[in-house]
Image (cartoon, rainbow, N blue to C red; front, side, top):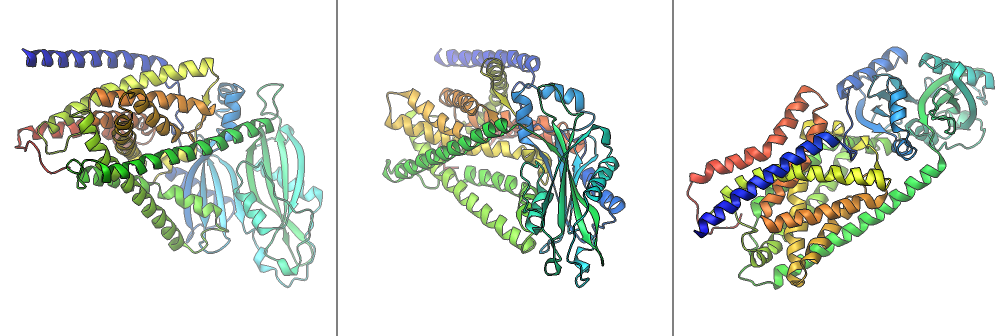
Length: 597
């Protein structure tokens, strides 16, 4: 009778979960993407198309061959502009008015020669495929005029403005809509490279009106002309949103100088008050992230103490090796997949390209990866070895090894339950942001630098979902909740809330504002996940977490190419495939208690 009652209760539980998931699915479809996903950047113009466009443009318009040059690509945008549009409620008017003319997202294609100052950058609009910016360094002929006897490279104001306006007309902009803002000057090679890389254009490093002499031939005398576009104004009380910055170099000749445009950037002007507000929020987010790191370290430290002070018959140092190996392998795949982004960041900051060639970057990347893996393995190992015995003592059955009786069936059920919980969590998130967006003024911005299109293989983007699902659940649920429940046995609330708060602080750098919005959201969700852990088991929360993130990440891939769509569908189905494989193994013999896995 008791077994029948238990079976009936379990069936009812599945029915209730399925009903809640069905209602949640309807709510998600009705509410849509209320909380703006920082990864949700479409790519109408693909990476390959952007590279081809940039290379062809340099060849046909600038007579520059990219043969023999190293190239990197990264999708970028202007986070400050995104924030400004959100704060002033101009986001929808902006895209309604200008979506056919100019987006805020672009591919930055960088060609360079390692170990030299040679650098050519081309910005390709990700929506239209138009060239919206470029930088050429060094300018043509600068390095071939030594000994000409020319000691002055000044150009007349008319020469400079004429060159700037000609360039703007060539890029399709009407001179009648332009207001002259001003001209700055610089002769510093470092400042020139900074200008060529400066997409936001908020800081113009200048050193006054100087003259390049024979002793400094490689430093072009640069005029920075700024013009404001009066057509880009959404409301009378708002400033002109768009300015154009044209870089005109004075190229020495035998007698005087001639002009050459070596750079052009479209710059969005954001009010200083908005910049200050966003900067303060981002600074605070960095401090909160430091608190997260400290909290995680303390969990790890107390976990180490538990490993050596807990009941020696229950702590097994060989525990969880397969789980740790798989999780670490997923982390390495995700890490190597981000190589193009790291390469772009390094090549963009090194003077004139890679200081020591590709080798220096490989060394940097290798050291960074080794340190990351060591930290990851250490945290995972302690979380499993210390967390599992405490969980077994506190809640028998919350943790099982892979060769214990019933584990395979539990994996199958956890995979199915994970789908239901993931849909329910999505609906709860949509409701959360519906409330906070409308009543607490929260808002978020897209971060193109985090886009999957910057990865080596965009389709592997959801691997990150499994990295988060396996590592975070082991640390903040298995170890965190068990540790606090062990030493605060009468207060389950503390055991649930504290690890959830630490976990939430780890997401403080997400571009969601005000800063406390993401903290409140994930603290609540962390408590909810903890309750799911206590109600069911560790496998359930791992599958639910990974499934939830996989679905969100796959939605981004569905806006890509056909192969990206296939990858997205695969990762959405992966939890089911894993669970079904475990289900097929049910007939194979298993021990009642075996070596930990």
